[in-house]
Amino acid sequence: MRRASVIEKDAASIGTLKDLTNVFESLASTQVAKMKTKVLISQDFFGLLWERYTSLRIDPARRITNRDGVGNNGRNAIILISAEAGLSGDLDARVIETMVTDNDLSKTDILVLGSHGASQLTQRGIPYARFFKLPESDDYINVSPVIEAVLPYERIVVYYEEYVSLGSQIVRSIDLVSHISDMSKDYEEGTMTDYDTIFEPSLEMIADEMEETMMRLALSQTILQSALAQAASRFNAMTMAEDRAGELLGEYKLEFHRAKRSESDRRLREVLVGMKKKRREAAAEAS
Amino acid sequence: MSAKEQATLHVIARAPFTLYYDGPALSLSALNAVGKFDILPGHADFFSMLLAGEVYIETDKEPIIFNISTGIVTVRADEVLLFANM
Image 1 (tube, one colour):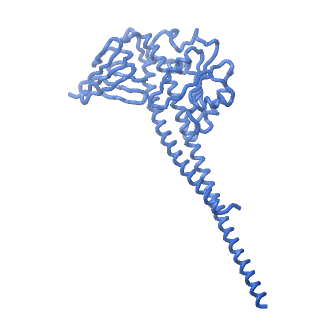
Image 2 (cartoon, one colour):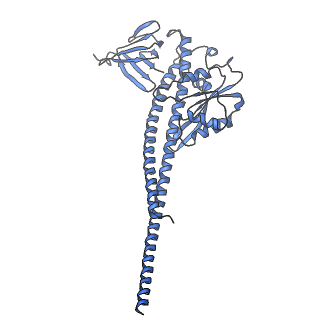
Image 3 (cartoon, chains in turn orange, brown):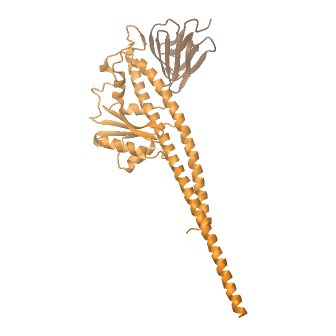
Protein backbone atom coordinates (compact mmCIF):
# COMPACT_ATOMS: atom_id res chain seq x y z
CA MET A 1 0.00 0.00 0.00
CA ARG A 2 1.19 3.54 -0.85
CA ARG A 3 2.04 5.91 1.97
CA ALA A 4 -0.70 8.35 3.05
CA SER A 5 1.55 11.37 2.37
CA VAL A 6 2.13 10.21 -1.23
CA ILE A 7 -1.60 9.67 -1.75
CA GLU A 8 -2.32 13.10 -0.28
CA LYS A 9 0.11 14.68 -2.75
CA ASP A 10 -1.47 12.84 -5.72
CA ALA A 11 -4.96 13.81 -4.52
CA ALA A 12 -3.89 17.47 -4.43
CA SER A 13 -2.69 17.18 -8.07
CA ILE A 14 -5.99 15.59 -9.12
CA GLY A 15 -7.82 18.38 -7.25
CA THR A 16 -5.92 20.98 -9.30
CA LEU A 17 -6.74 19.04 -12.47
CA LYS A 18 -10.41 18.96 -11.47
CA ASP A 19 -10.38 22.74 -10.92
CA LEU A 20 -8.72 23.25 -14.31
CA THR A 21 -11.21 21.06 -16.17
CA ASN A 22 -13.97 22.98 -14.39
CA VAL A 23 -12.55 26.25 -15.76
CA PHE A 24 -12.26 24.77 -19.28
CA GLU A 25 -15.80 23.43 -18.98
CA SER A 26 -17.07 26.91 -18.09
CA LEU A 27 -15.12 28.43 -20.99
CA ALA A 28 -16.53 25.85 -23.41
CA SER A 29 -20.02 26.49 -22.08
CA THR A 30 -19.64 30.24 -22.68
CA GLN A 31 -18.26 29.51 -26.14
CA VAL A 32 -21.26 27.27 -26.94
CA ALA A 33 -23.71 30.00 -25.90
CA LYS A 34 -21.82 32.62 -27.92
CA MET A 35 -21.58 30.43 -31.01
CA LYS A 36 -25.25 29.45 -30.80
CA THR A 37 -26.26 33.10 -30.86
CA LYS A 38 -23.97 33.75 -33.81
CA VAL A 39 -25.34 30.78 -35.73
CA LEU A 40 -28.90 32.00 -35.16
CA ILE A 41 -28.10 35.59 -36.20
CA SER A 42 -26.24 34.36 -39.26
CA GLN A 43 -29.10 31.99 -40.22
CA ASP A 44 -31.52 34.88 -39.95
CA PHE A 45 -29.32 37.04 -42.18
CA PHE A 46 -28.96 34.17 -44.65
CA GLY A 47 -32.75 33.73 -44.69
CA LEU A 48 -33.39 37.38 -45.49
CA LEU A 49 -30.80 37.44 -48.23
CA TRP A 50 -32.14 34.16 -49.53
CA GLU A 51 -35.59 35.66 -49.84
CA ARG A 52 -34.20 38.35 -52.12
CA TYR A 53 -31.90 36.03 -54.05
CA THR A 54 -34.70 33.60 -54.89
CA SER A 55 -36.88 36.43 -56.15
CA LEU A 56 -34.46 37.06 -59.02
CA ARG A 57 -35.51 35.45 -62.26
CA ILE A 58 -32.78 34.76 -64.80
CA ASP A 59 -31.95 32.11 -67.35
CA PRO A 60 -30.99 28.99 -65.30
CA ALA A 61 -28.46 27.98 -67.98
CA ARG A 62 -26.40 31.04 -67.11
CA ARG A 63 -26.28 30.49 -63.40
CA ILE A 64 -23.18 29.52 -61.47
CA THR A 65 -25.13 26.69 -59.91
CA ASN A 66 -25.55 25.21 -63.37
CA ARG A 67 -22.37 23.15 -63.61
CA ASP A 68 -22.70 22.06 -67.27
CA GLY A 69 -19.40 22.51 -69.02
CA VAL A 70 -17.53 22.94 -65.75
CA GLY A 71 -15.29 20.22 -64.46
CA ASN A 72 -11.76 19.64 -63.34
CA ASN A 73 -10.92 16.53 -65.42
CA GLY A 74 -13.93 14.78 -63.97
CA ARG A 75 -12.64 15.29 -60.43
CA ASN A 76 -14.77 16.35 -57.49
CA ALA A 77 -13.84 18.62 -54.63
CA ILE A 78 -14.31 17.95 -50.95
CA ILE A 79 -14.10 20.75 -48.42
CA LEU A 80 -13.24 19.25 -45.06
CA ILE A 81 -13.94 21.58 -42.13
CA SER A 82 -12.06 20.68 -38.98
CA ALA A 83 -10.84 22.37 -35.82
CA GLU A 84 -7.86 24.70 -35.80
CA ALA A 85 -6.40 22.86 -32.82
CA GLY A 86 -7.05 19.74 -30.76
CA LEU A 87 -9.23 19.48 -27.64
CA SER A 88 -12.41 18.89 -29.63
CA GLY A 89 -12.89 15.24 -28.84
CA ASP A 90 -13.06 12.75 -31.70
CA LEU A 91 -15.20 14.88 -34.02
CA ASP A 92 -12.53 15.50 -36.67
CA ALA A 93 -11.65 11.80 -36.77
CA ARG A 94 -15.33 10.98 -37.31
CA VAL A 95 -15.62 13.53 -40.11
CA ILE A 96 -12.58 12.06 -41.87
CA GLU A 97 -13.87 8.50 -41.48
CA THR A 98 -17.23 9.48 -43.00
CA MET A 99 -15.51 11.28 -45.85
CA VAL A 100 -13.26 8.27 -46.59
CA THR A 101 -16.24 5.87 -46.50
CA ASP A 102 -18.43 8.04 -48.76
CA ASN A 103 -15.92 8.83 -51.50
CA ASP A 104 -13.50 7.40 -54.02
CA LEU A 105 -10.54 9.53 -52.97
CA SER A 106 -8.63 8.77 -56.20
CA LYS A 107 -11.15 10.95 -58.06
CA THR A 108 -11.37 13.65 -55.44
CA ASP A 109 -9.33 16.67 -54.42
CA ILE A 110 -9.54 17.45 -50.73
CA LEU A 111 -9.38 21.01 -49.49
CA VAL A 112 -8.97 21.08 -45.75
CA LEU A 113 -9.87 23.93 -43.41
CA GLY A 114 -8.23 23.76 -39.99
CA SER A 115 -4.82 22.49 -38.85
CA HIS A 116 -6.22 19.60 -36.82
CA GLY A 117 -7.90 18.04 -39.86
CA ALA A 118 -4.76 18.53 -41.95
CA SER A 119 -2.58 16.77 -39.38
CA GLN A 120 -5.11 13.94 -39.02
CA LEU A 121 -5.16 13.44 -42.80
CA THR A 122 -1.34 13.39 -42.87
CA GLN A 123 -1.26 10.82 -40.06
CA ARG A 124 -3.60 8.60 -42.08
CA GLY A 125 -1.58 9.05 -45.26
CA ILE A 126 -4.45 10.80 -47.09
CA PRO A 127 -3.14 13.52 -49.40
CA TYR A 128 -4.92 16.86 -49.67
CA ALA A 129 -4.77 19.42 -52.46
CA ARG A 130 -5.05 22.64 -50.47
CA PHE A 131 -4.96 23.74 -46.85
CA PHE A 132 -6.68 26.82 -45.42
CA LYS A 133 -6.27 28.11 -41.91
CA LEU A 134 -9.56 28.71 -40.15
CA PRO A 135 -10.28 32.40 -39.55
CA GLU A 136 -9.25 33.56 -36.09
CA SER A 137 -12.35 35.69 -35.65
CA ASP A 138 -15.86 34.34 -36.12
CA ASP A 139 -17.14 37.84 -36.83
CA TYR A 140 -15.93 37.89 -40.39
CA ILE A 141 -15.26 34.66 -42.20
CA ASN A 142 -13.52 35.28 -45.49
CA VAL A 143 -14.13 32.13 -47.50
CA SER A 144 -13.53 33.73 -50.91
CA PRO A 145 -10.18 31.93 -51.47
CA VAL A 146 -11.88 28.59 -50.77
CA ILE A 147 -14.79 29.35 -53.12
CA GLU A 148 -12.37 30.45 -55.85
CA ALA A 149 -10.44 27.21 -55.46
CA VAL A 150 -13.52 24.98 -55.76
CA LEU A 151 -15.47 26.79 -58.49
CA PRO A 152 -13.85 24.83 -61.35
CA TYR A 153 -15.09 21.54 -59.91
CA GLU A 154 -18.32 19.94 -61.04
CA ARG A 155 -19.28 18.67 -57.61
CA ILE A 156 -18.34 20.36 -54.36
CA VAL A 157 -19.13 18.50 -51.16
CA VAL A 158 -18.60 19.98 -47.72
CA TYR A 159 -17.99 17.69 -44.73
CA TYR A 160 -18.48 19.26 -41.33
CA GLU A 161 -19.75 18.73 -37.80
CA GLU A 162 -23.21 19.85 -36.88
CA TYR A 163 -24.51 20.74 -33.45
CA VAL A 164 -27.70 18.88 -32.55
CA SER A 165 -27.62 19.42 -28.81
CA LEU A 166 -25.02 19.84 -26.11
CA GLY A 167 -24.74 16.08 -25.84
CA SER A 168 -24.96 15.28 -29.53
CA GLN A 169 -22.93 16.42 -32.52
CA ILE A 170 -23.19 14.69 -35.86
CA VAL A 171 -21.15 14.54 -39.05
CA ARG A 172 -22.90 16.11 -42.03
CA SER A 173 -22.14 16.62 -45.66
CA ILE A 174 -23.77 18.91 -48.20
CA ASP A 175 -23.33 19.32 -51.91
CA LEU A 176 -22.66 23.04 -51.96
CA VAL A 177 -23.96 23.69 -55.49
CA SER A 178 -27.12 21.61 -55.32
CA HIS A 179 -27.70 22.97 -51.80
CA ILE A 180 -27.90 26.45 -53.32
CA SER A 181 -29.97 25.23 -56.32
CA ASP A 182 -32.35 23.19 -54.16
CA MET A 183 -33.07 26.13 -51.93
CA SER A 184 -34.23 28.21 -54.89
CA LYS A 185 -36.61 25.59 -56.29
CA ASP A 186 -40.30 26.33 -56.53
CA TYR A 187 -39.98 29.82 -55.19
CA GLU A 188 -42.41 31.80 -57.26
CA GLU A 189 -43.72 34.42 -54.89
CA GLY A 190 -42.84 38.03 -55.68
CA THR A 191 -40.32 37.57 -58.42
CA MET A 192 -38.21 40.55 -59.50
CA THR A 193 -37.58 40.84 -63.23
CA ASP A 194 -36.04 43.63 -65.26
CA TYR A 195 -39.55 44.58 -66.43
CA ASP A 196 -40.56 45.85 -63.03
CA THR A 197 -37.28 46.43 -61.20
CA ILE A 198 -34.27 48.66 -61.75
CA PHE A 199 -31.10 46.57 -61.56
CA GLU A 200 -27.82 48.32 -61.01
CA PRO A 201 -25.47 47.43 -62.74
CA SER A 202 -27.54 44.63 -64.41
CA LEU A 203 -29.69 41.65 -63.49
CA GLU A 204 -27.03 39.18 -64.70
CA MET A 205 -24.21 40.82 -62.76
CA ILE A 206 -26.29 41.01 -59.62
CA ALA A 207 -27.34 37.37 -60.01
CA ASP A 208 -23.69 36.30 -60.42
CA GLU A 209 -22.67 38.34 -57.38
CA MET A 210 -25.60 37.01 -55.36
CA GLU A 211 -24.82 33.40 -56.26
CA GLU A 212 -21.20 33.72 -55.20
CA THR A 213 -22.34 35.51 -52.05
CA MET A 214 -24.82 32.75 -51.26
CA MET A 215 -22.14 30.10 -51.76
CA ARG A 216 -19.77 32.02 -49.52
CA LEU A 217 -22.47 32.42 -46.88
CA ALA A 218 -23.48 28.75 -47.10
CA LEU A 219 -19.85 27.77 -46.56
CA SER A 220 -19.46 30.31 -43.74
CA GLN A 221 -22.50 28.80 -42.07
CA THR A 222 -21.00 25.31 -42.17
CA ILE A 223 -17.83 26.75 -40.59
CA LEU A 224 -19.91 28.34 -37.84
CA GLN A 225 -21.90 25.14 -37.32
CA SER A 226 -18.67 23.22 -37.12
CA ALA A 227 -17.22 25.65 -34.56
CA LEU A 228 -20.39 25.30 -32.49
CA ALA A 229 -20.22 21.49 -32.63
CA GLN A 230 -16.55 21.60 -31.64
CA ALA A 231 -17.27 23.88 -28.69
CA ALA A 232 -20.02 21.49 -27.56
CA SER A 233 -17.72 18.51 -28.00
CA ARG A 234 -15.02 20.31 -25.97
CA PHE A 235 -17.60 21.00 -23.27
CA ASN A 236 -18.51 17.30 -23.16
CA ALA A 237 -14.86 16.24 -23.05
CA MET A 238 -14.21 18.64 -20.16
CA THR A 239 -17.34 17.50 -18.29
CA MET A 240 -16.23 13.89 -18.62
CA ALA A 241 -12.70 14.78 -17.50
CA GLU A 242 -14.07 16.66 -14.50
CA ASP A 243 -16.34 13.76 -13.56
CA ARG A 244 -13.43 11.32 -13.86
CA ALA A 245 -11.24 13.60 -11.75
CA GLY A 246 -14.04 13.73 -9.15
CA GLU A 247 -14.25 9.92 -9.09
CA LEU A 248 -10.47 9.66 -8.79
CA LEU A 249 -10.50 12.14 -5.91
CA GLY A 250 -13.08 9.96 -4.11
CA GLU A 251 -10.95 6.86 -4.68
CA TYR A 252 -7.84 8.68 -3.47
CA LYS A 253 -9.62 9.88 -0.32
CA LEU A 254 -10.69 6.31 0.47
CA GLU A 255 -7.19 5.02 -0.20
CA PHE A 256 -5.75 7.87 1.92
CA HIS A 257 -7.95 7.00 4.92
CA ARG A 258 -7.11 3.29 4.56
CA ALA A 259 -3.41 4.14 4.40
CA LYS A 260 -3.71 6.44 7.42
CA ARG A 261 -5.52 3.75 9.44
CA SER A 262 -3.02 1.17 8.33
CA GLU A 263 -0.14 3.45 9.32
CA SER A 264 -1.65 4.18 12.74
CA ASP A 265 -2.36 0.43 13.23
CA ARG A 266 1.25 -0.28 12.34
CA ARG A 267 2.47 2.35 14.83
CA LEU A 268 0.19 0.92 17.54
CA ARG A 269 1.51 -2.57 16.80
CA GLU A 270 5.07 -1.27 17.06
CA VAL A 271 4.27 0.39 20.42
CA LEU A 272 2.65 -2.79 21.73
CA VAL A 273 5.53 -4.92 20.53
CA GLY A 274 7.93 -2.45 22.17
CA MET A 275 5.98 -2.54 25.43
CA LYS A 276 5.90 -6.34 25.40
CA LYS A 277 9.63 -6.38 24.80
CA LYS A 278 10.21 -3.93 27.67
CA ARG A 279 7.99 -6.02 29.96
CA ARG A 280 9.89 -9.19 29.03
CA GLU A 281 13.20 -7.43 29.65
CA ALA A 282 11.93 -6.09 33.01
CA ALA A 283 10.73 -9.57 34.01
CA ALA A 284 14.06 -11.06 33.00
CA GLU A 285 15.94 -8.49 35.05
CA ALA A 286 13.68 -9.09 38.10
CA SER A 287 14.23 -12.82 37.93
CA MET B 1 -44.82 64.50 -37.59
CA SER B 2 -42.85 61.35 -36.80
CA ALA B 3 -41.37 58.97 -39.38
CA LYS B 4 -44.00 56.40 -38.48
CA GLU B 5 -46.86 58.84 -39.14
CA GLN B 6 -45.35 59.92 -42.47
CA ALA B 7 -45.75 56.34 -43.81
CA THR B 8 -42.15 56.23 -44.84
CA LEU B 9 -39.73 53.48 -45.67
CA HIS B 10 -39.14 50.42 -43.57
CA VAL B 11 -35.41 49.80 -43.51
CA ILE B 12 -33.54 46.70 -42.40
CA ALA B 13 -29.79 47.20 -42.61
CA ARG B 14 -27.54 44.43 -41.46
CA ALA B 15 -24.33 42.49 -41.82
CA PRO B 16 -24.01 38.76 -41.01
CA PHE B 17 -23.51 39.47 -37.29
CA THR B 18 -24.59 43.08 -36.95
CA LEU B 19 -27.96 44.77 -37.07
CA TYR B 20 -27.38 48.41 -37.98
CA TYR B 21 -31.02 49.41 -38.12
CA ASP B 22 -34.50 47.94 -38.33
CA GLY B 23 -37.32 50.46 -38.37
CA PRO B 24 -39.01 53.34 -40.13
CA ALA B 25 -36.89 55.84 -42.01
CA LEU B 26 -37.28 58.95 -44.09
CA SER B 27 -34.52 58.11 -46.55
CA LEU B 28 -31.45 55.99 -47.14
CA SER B 29 -28.32 57.13 -48.95
CA ALA B 30 -25.50 54.93 -50.20
CA LEU B 31 -22.98 54.60 -53.04
CA ASN B 32 -23.10 52.38 -56.12
CA ALA B 33 -21.19 52.24 -59.43
CA VAL B 34 -23.19 55.18 -60.79
CA GLY B 35 -22.55 57.36 -57.76
CA LYS B 36 -24.22 58.44 -54.55
CA PHE B 37 -27.96 57.82 -54.53
CA ASP B 38 -30.93 58.35 -52.22
CA ILE B 39 -33.92 56.14 -51.66
CA LEU B 40 -37.05 57.99 -50.66
CA PRO B 41 -40.59 56.72 -50.01
CA GLY B 42 -42.30 55.69 -53.23
CA HIS B 43 -39.02 54.68 -54.90
CA ALA B 44 -39.34 52.19 -57.77
CA ASP B 45 -38.41 48.57 -57.08
CA PHE B 46 -34.66 48.58 -57.09
CA PHE B 47 -31.80 46.08 -56.74
CA SER B 48 -28.24 47.35 -56.60
CA MET B 49 -24.75 46.30 -55.70
CA LEU B 50 -23.11 48.81 -53.38
CA LEU B 51 -19.59 50.13 -53.29
CA ALA B 52 -17.51 50.63 -50.17
CA GLY B 53 -18.52 53.80 -48.40
CA GLU B 54 -20.86 55.42 -45.95
CA VAL B 55 -24.51 54.51 -45.55
CA TYR B 56 -26.76 57.23 -44.14
CA ILE B 57 -30.24 56.44 -42.86
CA GLU B 58 -32.37 59.43 -41.96
CA THR B 59 -34.91 58.71 -39.26
CA ASP B 60 -37.17 60.98 -37.24
CA LYS B 61 -34.61 60.73 -34.43
CA GLU B 62 -30.85 60.52 -34.78
CA PRO B 63 -29.53 59.52 -38.22
CA ILE B 64 -27.89 56.11 -38.48
CA ILE B 65 -24.48 56.30 -40.14
CA PHE B 66 -22.11 53.41 -40.76
CA ASN B 67 -19.47 52.29 -43.25
CA ILE B 68 -19.63 49.20 -45.40
CA SER B 69 -17.02 47.37 -47.48
CA THR B 70 -19.47 45.57 -49.79
CA GLY B 71 -23.21 45.42 -49.99
CA ILE B 72 -26.46 44.87 -51.78
CA VAL B 73 -29.58 46.96 -51.41
CA THR B 74 -33.08 46.05 -52.51
CA VAL B 75 -36.25 48.13 -52.49
CA ARG B 76 -39.71 46.64 -52.86
CA ALA B 77 -42.89 48.48 -51.95
CA ASP B 78 -41.07 50.86 -49.60
CA GLU B 79 -39.30 48.02 -47.83
CA VAL B 80 -35.54 48.47 -48.01
CA LEU B 81 -33.18 45.61 -47.25
CA LEU B 82 -29.50 46.43 -47.08
CA PHE B 83 -27.01 43.60 -46.73
CA ALA B 84 -23.50 44.66 -45.90
CA ASN B 85 -20.03 43.20 -45.50
CA MET B 86 -20.74 39.71 -46.81
